[in-house]
Structures are given as C-alpha cells and as structure tokens.
Amino acid sequence: MSFQSLPLSPTILKAIEEVGYQQPTPVQQRVIPVAVDGQDVLASAETGTGKTAAFALSTLQQLEVNDVAQQTELSHGRAVRVLVMTPTRELAIQIQQCFSDYGKHLPYRSLAVYGGASINPQRKALAQGIDILVATPGRLFDIVGQYQLDLSQVVHLVIDEADRMLDMGFVKDIEKVRRLVNLQHQTMMFSATYSQAVEQLAKNMLEQPALVNIKSEATTKQITHKAFKLDKRRKAELLSELIGKYNWQQSMVFVSSKESAEFLVSELKLDGISAAVFHGDKTQGARNRALDEFKAGKIRALVATDLAARGIDIEALPRVINFELPEELEDFVHRVGRTGRAGLSGEAMTFFSEQEKSKFAEIEALIEQTIPVVIPKGYEPGAPMPARYRELNLDSSAVGKRASGKSSSGKNGKFKGTKHTHGKKGKFASGNKTNRSGSAASNGKSGAASKGKSKPSRQGKYASNKG
Image (tube, rainbow, N blue to C red; front, side):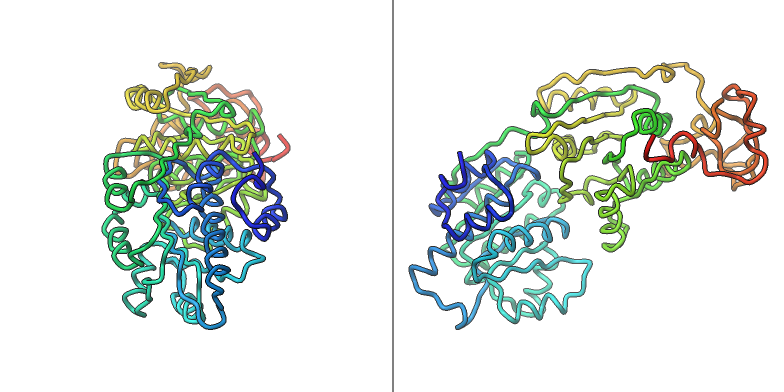
C-alpha cells in the first residue's frame, strides 16, 4: 500500500514525499482511514511504529477538508482545534515537529508546551493564535489555570502513551480535559500495552472506537533476543567486556533507577568507555546534549531510566541492553521496541541474576517468546570475581556504593583491602600509579605499566572507538 491510496490530500502527500517516506506503516494503514472518517480510535501501538504520523496526518487532513468546506479564514482568528496530550517533553517536541513537517504546506500553526522550560514564550505563542497544541498534562493545566486557555473549540483530542500517562498519575487530568473540549469531538487513544486501567479509561473517553492492534515491536522478527545470567555485581564488568570485545559503538542501556544510571556510567568511564546518563534529575539541556552526542556517535552508551527515556526516538538504533529488569513488565516492551524498527535488524540483550529469574520468566510469558540464555565464560557461579566488583553492595539503598573503609588506592574507600589487577594492561586500573594484584593474576607487566604518568582506566582496551 502507498500513501496515495490513503484518503490524504495532494498537499499533505507532497509534504510526505518531501520528508522521504514512501510506504505507510501498518498502524498508519489502519488508523488513517477510520480517523479521517471521524471515528474514535483505540490503538495498541508504541513509539517507533509510526503512530505519531498516523494521528498527525489524519487530523491535518480533517482540518483541511473542514476549512475548505466552510471556507474558514484563519486570518480572522485562530483557536486550538487539535489537542495532543503526551507524558514527556521529549515526546511533545517530537510530535510538534511531526505536525510541522507534514503540515508545512498548510496554514496551520502548531506549538508544544511542556515543563522544564519558561512558560512565558509558550504563553505568548498561544496568544498569537495556535491551531494544534501538543502538551504535557502539568504544563497544560498551568496555562489553563493561570491564563484561562480556552479549549472549547478542540474537536480532535489525542491521548498518546495512555498507559504511561496512567502510570504517572495523570488519569484525572485526562478526564478533566474531556470536560473542557468541545462536546462534539473525536478522541484517539494510543497505548503500547492494555491494562485494566487503560481499558477503563477507554470506556470513559471513547465512543464505539475503531480498534487497532499492532503486534508488539518486542516480538518482531527484526529483533534478536539474547539473555545473560550472572551475578548482579558483575553486570557492569560484563557490559564493559561486551562493548570492548565487539566494538559496539551505540548501545542504549536501561536501568531501573537514577542511582543505578549514575553508578553504571561511572563504571563504564573507569573502563575507558564513553557514556552518559539520561534521567529525570538532569536538566533538559543536559539531557539534550547527552542525546545529541549519542546520536552523533560521540558516546557509546546512553544509560537511561524508563521514565526519562520515553519519547526518545533514535533512528537505526542497533541494540538495547536491559542492564536491570524493569519494575513494570510492560516497560520491557517499550525498551526493546526502540531497536529493530523500519525493517532494520536490532539486538536486545538482557542481563539477569539468579534472584531475578522469576521476573525474567514473566517477561518471556509477556512477549510470548523464549529468550536464549547464556552463562558467559568466566562468569559462572563460583568463578573468581575481581575485588572491584566483589565488594559491591547492590542490595542496599545506596545503589552501587562499595564497602566502606580505608582504601588501599587512597581514594575515599572506593577499593577496600587487597590490591588487585585483572591481568591485562590497565583493565581494572583506577587511574593512579598503584599496581593492583591478588584477585586476578598479574601478567608481569602491570607494575611497569603503572610507573610514571597515570593513564585513564583500561584505556588501551576499550577507550578507542575503533576497537
């Protein structure tokens, strides 16, 4: 099927061609015809399936047809007629850009409003007249409350990432919006997963919706799954080894907490691997810089929490690594669905320990797929463990912190007790001049290697992006 076979105007088709898209995705093929017809839509589709274009194209088409039929003159005044609610600022920005790209030859103005940025420029842009508003719930109601934003002309309401919106506690905000928009409106709701809460929200928000169920990206043939079972204290060690051994240049790594993200990035940097964190405690500017550097290939690992990473869309991402299993099983679908898109192949690597095997089994049941499990060589139960990892206490509230006490390295107790080396030049060096031996055999050269000016940890093995 081509875009020309869908009920879209020549003006919109021209913009699609200029963007470079040739064939609609399955969700676009199924959503656009019913949405253009004015039906409510309930779609199971996640980020990366083309759902944003599905609702953007269909609403733009309806605006254009309606304005031609009624001979609407936008110069006589604008009102918000399309409202898209989305959980994160990253998603809001991407969705607004999508409307801008596909509506480039149409006279409609779009705007994204979200927290973490000054409200004044957003308020001023609204005052100048906006047709399409993309908003996070918090900022939307700041503007509605403080500046009496009128939503009574909204005739197209889109609830994006409904499951995530509910997880974040926005159910009352969504229901409140329904009371503020025009009584005669169309609602489209998109969710990666169906829970009882999503079903209940759909019953409250939608009237006889067209149901669209797109197979989960986590189970597509383009994604190769593989799991590694090992002691959780050695996950960082294995990740560094895999990145170095296979010269991985771009890996998105998921953890379950901000503390874990900070810890893992510090460990990767000790191994000479460029990495950055992406979580909610970072400023928007810092998150944008990290994402831009990752896309540009300047950093090899982007370590993210599930919540912060919602809305990130990275073209041709080669692999996703589940360093920690998600708290909510459905997040596994969101994580893995970021690779293997648009017909490209992708890898999904999952690390789990003996204590996590029951949750791992639940994930397999969720995606209806058996994931091959490997116990990496050298990481078998009872295998010698470098002191750097042996002393980790990952069960405490201080995630990733090492045992306290005076450090033989002289660096605030980071390494306690026996000096050690991995047996390969600099592989577990701390960056100072001290030679470490004991937990792993010395190759006889580490003493010489440690003399003179200190060098970054394991730089000889992992720091170079060229392998």
